[in-house]
Image (cartoon, rainbow, N blue to C red; front, side, top):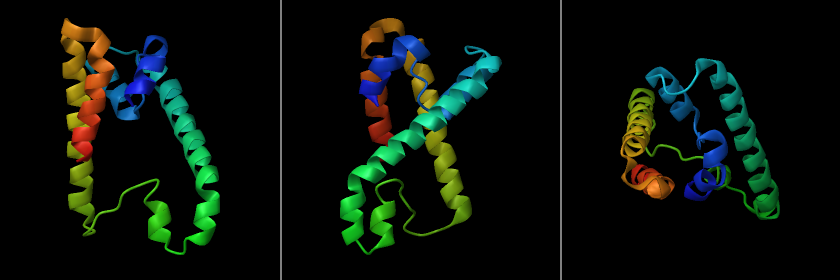
Length: 127
């Protein structure tokens, strides 16, 4: 994530997640008219990335019988399925992500390090 943010940050503001784009629009820091285009680009980029990963691992998956193992490359699943608790968990994680990114961006003490710090934030949320 940090490498992607460094690579495209000066072009797009490093909006790599629709939640961030929408959060910035609600904050008034990003024009609502640009939101649909950014989200479309984010979705297209995610699909292209998923196709590349799929094609790369295709020979391995031909030998793998467990569908859960294959799915684990693209997504995680709850150990105990509970729709409400799982949705709440995703909402909390998304809030922490957007709030953290906005807080990091508000502090201008080390703009060059912001993508690196956001990368650590994402790792910590994933733990």
